[in-house]
Length: 245
Ligand SMILES: [Mg+2]
Image 1 (tube, rainbow, N blue to C red):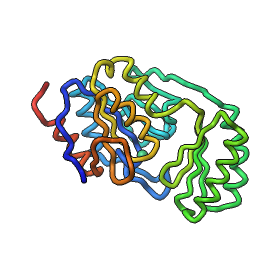
Image 2 (image 1 turned 135 degrees about the vertical axis):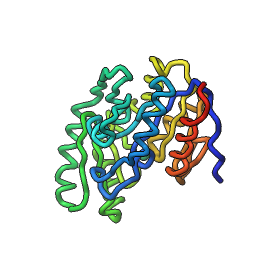
Image 3 (image 1 turned 90 degrees about the vertical axis):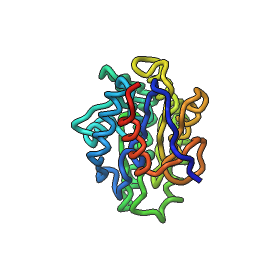
Image 4 (image 1 turned 60 degrees about the vertical axis):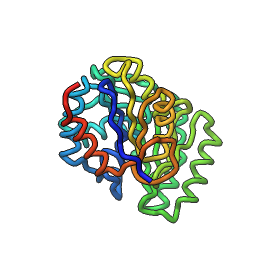
């Protein structure tokens, strides 16, 4: 059962997954929205913790910025292959662009033949969404396995009603490490909050560094704590409201 979210060191750094964590999952990825209280609490957290607040997501950078507007946080997008640091500098890891393009070319006709499936082309990864055709999970899986067999530079990341294909060696754990190597995240205790399989890499890294890992909702996890979104937001407001460091 849930352990209460704990108190944290004054010098903490926060990392949040986006879908299912900061935003409720919607029937289509473009339909999510972020509650105003989430923006408010993130802004207050960033103020209180010297800007050490980042989003770590599989989404493209522009998509997250669009949902979060008007606030703009440090963000690792596409699982970390694109990363905007706290100074606003964007770091690219083009990874395996050709393999991603080949995967897109193969999956395009499959998606076109199955209405309701959605292929999301990102800069250095690709996502096959089947939320509206859950009965096609197995076919989708076989299709992405075939793509990876032909493009060994890619790996499959299964998520909630989605299979993502991304270059090997890119994951949310590495994204967290990159942030932690630079100001204002450096030398702080990392806290990672996420809800999906792809967040496990980050939980592992944060646990190994003596940080705090929080899993939203159910599912097997390496995270040490669990919460639901409501509990998470309430906890963040408490952290913001408590006495200054
Ligand atoms: Mg998520």
